[in-house]
Image 1: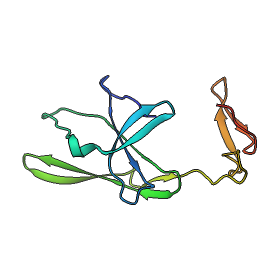
Image 2: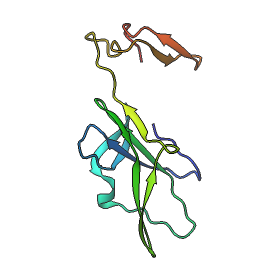
Image 3: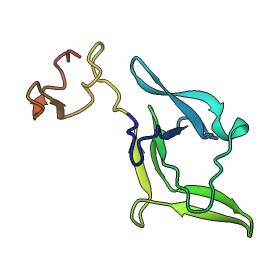
Image 4: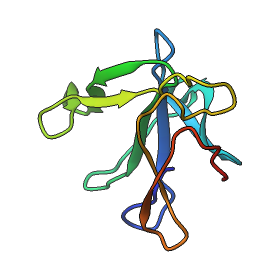
Length: 136
């Protein structure tokens, strides 16, 4: 889920579906089961314009159901003196995301894992058998 940071304004939420061979920066929308991409290129109808000294917080996410991906983000910044490319990484390394393991048993979505953990009622993490149905 995206989090608001900074000045109390709602952050701009943009996501990339890495299962798409040509992912686009999608506007993310909060639905019942979490943040979801709209399928529409955010920048096809929007620009982010800042006055001198002004800041804007972006929540940028990448998601996949099937892939293992390593990536960096590249942001095109246009100024009155020209445009430049700003590369965004994770402290000098590429970001990395992996889709869920394939279930080994029908009806047990986490059965492809050796171990899983969930946050228990006391907000502490507890080990759960991947071959046991998990209540939400």
